[in-house]
Image (cartoon, rainbow, N blue to C red; front, side, top):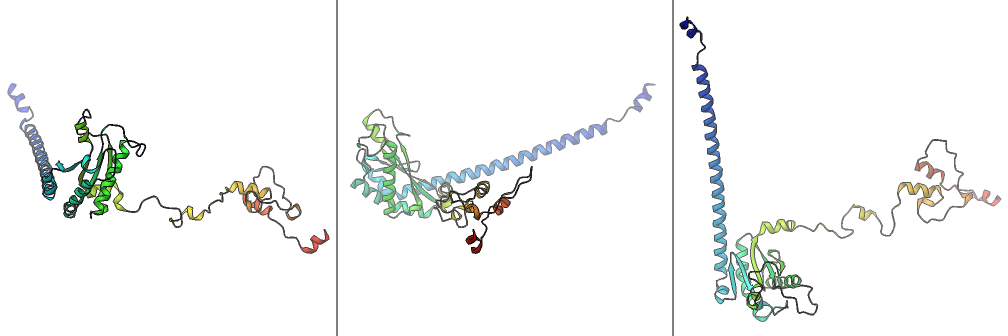
Length: 299
């Protein structure tokens, strides 16, 4: 009896084979996913390494271009940012270039221009101050305005020295982002500085909208716009207002027009109860009626 029951039991090996096939498929999919992840990670690492090498090459190129000014000790180069102490360029609380600062900027312009010509970079000139109140008797509102004027002065000097104007722009930070605490005069002198830093030129183009025309256009420059169609000094009259003025006898629906004489206006037609008259019908009814000279003389 037991032998007959064992012979009638369903076979186990087909189900076991299906299970093994499913497990094998799962392992194959997992292996493929791991391979794809490794390939993507390798590509990311390769791109990061290329970017790091490009940055290092750019900094080395900038350092070679500024070897002369760096040797003089008048400037510093930290992470690609050229630092110039404020005492070299300006007097205290002033935005007028000193003679030494003007000569230094004239010396920096040729290597900077050569560097920018070889790379897709622009330069940002940033102005910084300490936290002391200004002593200019109202010439500048605050340190922010003073740092802005100083950075603009440096930008103008670099442009006059031959750097294209579209490759340089100014920024102002005031007393923010100090490099040292403002607790001693020596440390405050470190914070009074101007920095010149290269930035990718495509980034500058995105900031400025690609250098295209400004979206703000003077009046009359937009052809076919509503500004051209509108005459200055004449307020527009809505259709409902025009109909109301016409019903009261104002010529053409204009505001402030003289009413037509009663004998020159056609009698108003009766309006059916419950029916609104459109503006065109009101205008037609209120239009002036030409009177023959004989009839006018007879009256």
